[in-house]
Image (cartoon, rainbow over all chains, first blue to last red):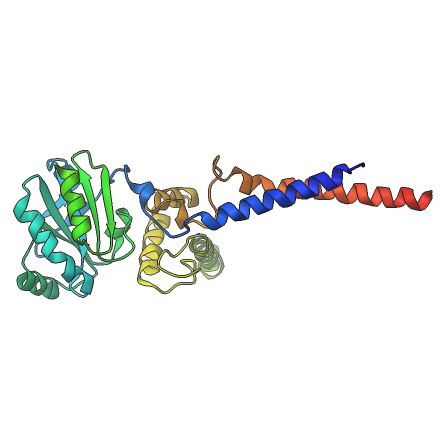
Length: 174
Length: 125
């Protein structure tokens, strides 16, 4: 029986398409930040929420063994649920410094928020128009980034820090 | 002097808007190729979300600083990964994606050519 070359090509192409679609179904298309682990934090300068003359840059973060950069806002409900874990981190670990970056918020509301729940931050910076958040690859609030003294991203947490994430941070900094 | 003023007015009336339109077109092109990460199937150009508004501000800043389109894409890819651009850059992972359409076009054309030639031969016989 003679099978034409054209038929073989069409058959191979159909098989190829089926394999591609089958593999495509198994690929996770949700956005994740796995690719950002290991990347470095780039140039930034962050003004203090209550004092424009006071600011920090990446050079200051190199002095800390570990830094957790937490993006929060007073209008963000999940930020309230993660607050206790941030306070725990500050109280129980001297290896880690916590930098809070306040996202698109009002100074009065931020101060009220921190007075009410406690201040877990070694420094609170402001990001009034959200541009600084883009430098850190943030796309929602709350988000946290754990970096080492080489400014390399070790962990990125999207959403509020919960018990599992908290334990993970503790393991990573020990 | 009058001639100079005349050309000055012409410049501002006709040429300046052209430049600003060029910039607007460039911005729109960039926005259209950026994925809104917090939206369902929308580009930055289509979305009114907070995230899209911030990305637009950052892109505008970069364009004002004279950065090229590729530099802006590279910056955003370094922050959010390649998922943020609709048109990914050529790499070994997506090589098939780039080559396949040309391959299908050439092989498809060749198959059609063979079929047509066969049918012609059959008719001639």
